[in-house]
Length: 230
Ligand code: DC
Image (cartoon, rainbow, N blue to C red):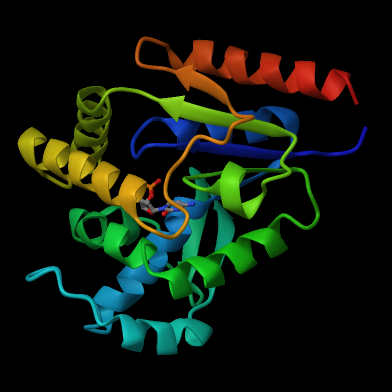
């Protein structure tokens, strides 16, 4: 059977990465976290003083000029995939609140989106991938055979991210996490370039009340239905 491309889009902390990663592992596909790529570019910008966490400023011209020198890749790790920024494992650092606070303005820059879209299409050229993000079913792979759009309330998503950060010993208040989630929703849905939108042919899943096992079963069922027609 030919391998397909699977796009999983949705709001931040909607659980789409978990769903995408687990489906990929169940069906033997490669999982690609496109949000990690935007986070890695943001980390680069913070380290090079191109983006300031303190005052929220971003030197878009300098970041655009630096893009050809930024290489992002993934490597397998003991607990899943590790994100590499110019060869350095930055998997933990890209999940910090500092990166989260600057990633939406970075991801809104057209030059950043074009560069990462290109990289993502190259990664998908062999097919057999599950990629999650915001614009995978609309812009990166509009012809993806399976498209899922994941939704859940801002409070549910903030609670998840809060517990995730606490488990990783990266303390933050629930109120700050919720404010960050709502703020990113606004930027992600209103930016001019590839805003977060549900693709017309995406299947919507509200997973607010679902267990991980129920999500796994739902994804696998959809995959089996789509591939059985091929
Ligand atoms: O999924 P995440 O929270 O790790 O994504 C981090 C940020 O990257 C998010 O605020 C929006 C942006 N993003 C994007 O604009 N397009 C994508 N395909 C993936 C993420």
